[in-house]
Length: 228
Image 1: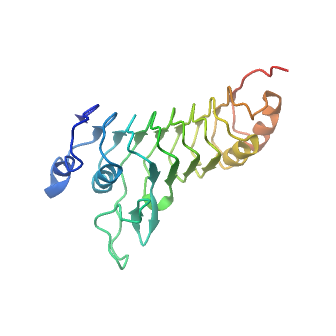
Image 2: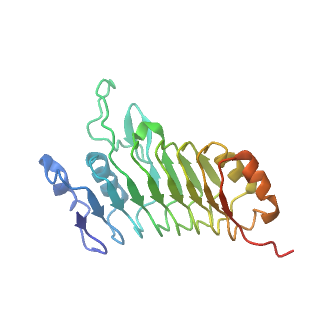
């Protein structure tokens, strides 16, 4: 376990000793919250350290996106550089599965997009917390074992795509998201039990039956009473 919260004077190269030459092979839990490291430094660390299970990036102002899309088999950041350092140009080397289970990016005000496709190999990710990321507009996830997704107070959220068959809890409190977008997203979540749409101005409390119809597994819907 390594906690580096609020270490505001770390150079961007400071994380390199954590993964170069096989250092800290037993490291599982890393907290970089409220630091000032650049996005590329964090992405490089995550690309190398596939053995990490718990990562916290809360309040990291230099995180602009979590775009783990893939071309040619490697993770790609927004500027097109590979996030996966052992990428083989011929695609003949099998990518390792990532052991990441819990990822926390609470109050990352500059994150606008989160993309985690199957190619990211996040097969163990079970909990993702992006709450209070007020400029987050798009979330597109294909995480087979994800069970808890917290998007509360992501007031700019417009696009939500979920390929998460084992999702059981979706928290959308105080999101300005369209009702139809939520319906489409949860229709792909056959194990969803809890949905929180309190204080969502575009979701009418009178239409909870529609949400249950598209997602029969729902047991609990938390919604605000209509003012009408």
